Length: 306
Image 1 (cartoon, rainbow, N blue to C red):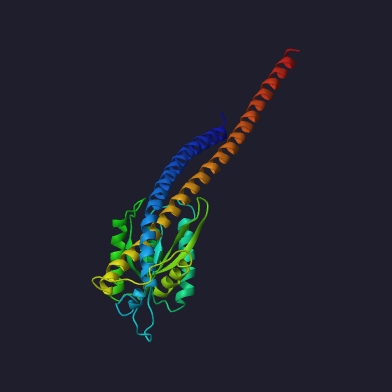
Image 2: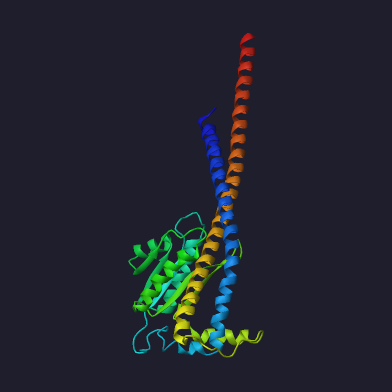
C-alpha cells in the first residue's frame, strides 16, 4: 500500500480517537451544566429572600443611614475614586471563546468607565483572567484560582471577605463585577454590575417598582439598632450578589465548554468523512493502476508469444 494511503489511514484513526475524547468532554460538561443549573435554581430562592429583605429596608428608609454607617464610598468628593473590577474567567481552556469574550468586554468596559487615568485595580477570579492581566503589567490586587465546578457558598464567602476587607481599608472606592451571564446553552451576554458600595438609591428604585405589584411594609421596629441590622443584612446581600455572579459565570463556562466540544466533535466527523473519501479515491486509483499494469503485462506476453 502506498505511503500516502498509510498516512491518510493514520490520520483517520487519530481523528476518530480525538472525536472520542471530545464526545466524552461534551458529556462531562453537559453533566456539570445540569448540576449547576439545579443548584442555581435552589439558590435563587435564598437570593430572592435576601433581596426582598433589603428592598423592605429601603422602602422603610432604613438604608438612608448607609452613608453615615460607613457602607458607602468616601464622602470626600474632591478625592478621585479608585475602582476595582472583579473579572470572572475560567481556570482552564477548552471553553471556546468564553474567556476571550469576558476579557475583551471587560477591557472595553474598563476603558469607558475608568478612561485613560488607569486608576483602577483588577480582582481576578479564574486563572485565565489573572494570567492575562499580569502578563500585561496591570495591577492585580487579588486573585482566586480553583473555583469549584459547582461553587459552594462558603467558598465564595472567602472571596467576599477578602474583597470587603480591601474595601474597608480604602484600597478601592467602588467595585464592579464583570462576567458572562448565562442565557441558554448557546447564548451568554456580558454583564458589568456595581456591587460596592451598596447603591441605596438603586435599591429604593427597585423597591418602588416592586410596591406596584405587592404591598411592602412601610415601617420597621428595629432591634437592637439600625446599624446592627445593616451590619448583618448588607454583608449577606453583597455575598449573595457576588455568589450569584460566580454561579452565573460558571454556568456560562460549562455551557460554552459543552458547545465547544460538540463543535469539535462535529468538525472531527467532517474531517473523518473527508479523509475517508480521500482514502477511498486514492485506494481506487491505486487498484486501477495495478489492474492497468497487469493488463498491460498480459498484452505484452501475448505479443511476445505471437
